[in-house]
Image 1 (cartoon, rainbow, N blue to C red):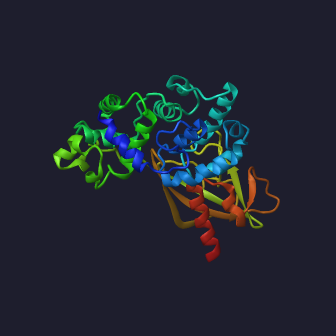
Image 2: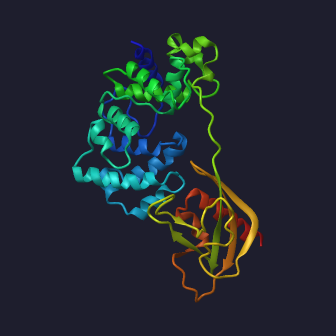
Image 3: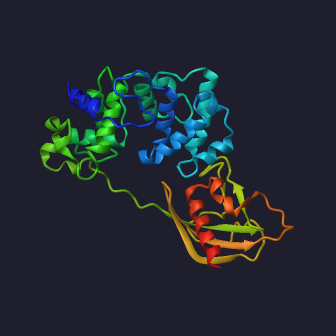
Length: 342
């Protein structure tokens, strides 16, 4: 059985992660598996660990999380990115609480908010011991090399899934999935794979080619579009104006600095929160989103005491506690540096 050397390797070398039970254990907590899998979507393990520990300390169960205030969750999530995940977490926790327990099948899991095919398979295998085909980016790389798949990604994904299905065992499917992830993360890395330490070395067609690092082949990506915007620093008596972004859409429900539209051309002062003596700075802030790159200009003004604006006045000295998304935190830090220099 091709999976046997991998499971033996995992028994000896499994990573100790705060959401993970020891190899062979049946004591896995579905809440912790679910939370970690959502957090790990397109996010590195090292980044997730402190967020996971903060969340599970504050909200240790589905029921506790379901009762959380939306704004508190969004603030706690700030900096982790892909903010729709946080909104889906709340919706999912509330649905699981309504049901009384998390479903233990892929079909039942896919019916929950924010859980797609991969996440359903991972939870079913890891939390409930179901045989499921779990394929993340690490597994794609391992399987592409193991079978020397020539078709470039993403077109090769059906082949990768079929090969993964063929080697997934009927028992210890959760350990197998986590072992494949660990192998891709620590041994079968994107660059300079450590083939001499790999439990699949003798079976690996990619290793036999002499250039396993060339797998998986990847189709060239189209360049991301560039967008431009302006963020506004409206200050009054040591406080800065923050607004709440619309619930739906990019960075929905998050506190943020006021901003104009993000367009293909620089919008200047369009979208300013008030008529004021706005001063555009020469400095800009750049940030990359999944589907576009953003460059924002920075405009600052002092707002008079009688001007009524929609939003909340947040103490500048305590801005770190506002839970601003990364792009707005970058801009706020830049504004803070400019204030200190002036």
